[in-house]
Image (cartoon, rainbow, N blue to C red; front, side):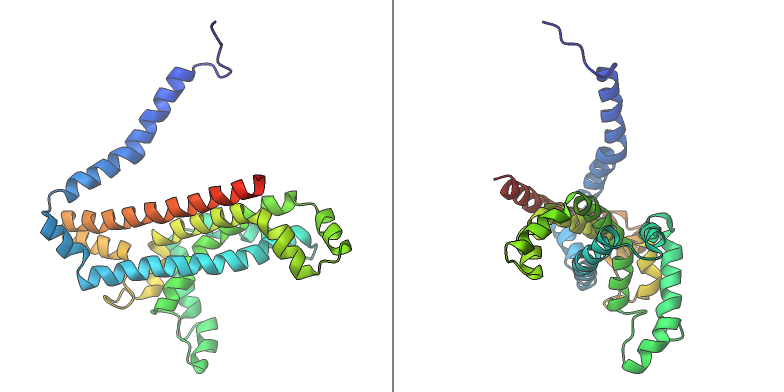
Length: 273
């Protein structure tokens, strides 16, 4: 028996979608693999295990994970304040959460550098305390935190809006204190959204270039991130080495995101059980 599709033109629409996806996503990845294949295995290992590359990998992934973890905590607090409290300027604060989405990354990098430089507004206050942000690893983390915060807030906010305050009131009436109510009643329902926000924040930070390149100082073996090292290799016309470094970032990112998605699916199944 013939079943009419709800959406007209499904076959042509799906074909165009697959073509679009293949041209913009699959084809560049295939070209990256073929360009990397120009290197022998020994040459590939020499490129990706060089001290400079290893330090760039460590800084990129380490700072991205740390930044995503910071965003996980403060993003939850910010989303909670926006959903559960009424205060002057709440709508303005809610709109400012999306500022990193709209702001060009190079502008964000210049702004953060001016703000946290030793002569900047915040940098001048931190300098007497012996805290240096600009042109350090801490500055790299600050830039990654800045670009990744909206992902956590926007992932958690809708879930909090769907959680009825009556559930918390029922838990309090049954004798639970506020901490127990949060841990046992609220947090289990937020885990999938928190993991999603963490994954999105990490993915955004690990590939960040524009906002980090200004505040980091770009010092090899100190504050040089992997995307910058890739750009350096491209400027030297060493395309196989650039794609080799990119392939490592791609592989590690896929593994981490796959693991986070598995945790998210496990958390969702635990809630439904």
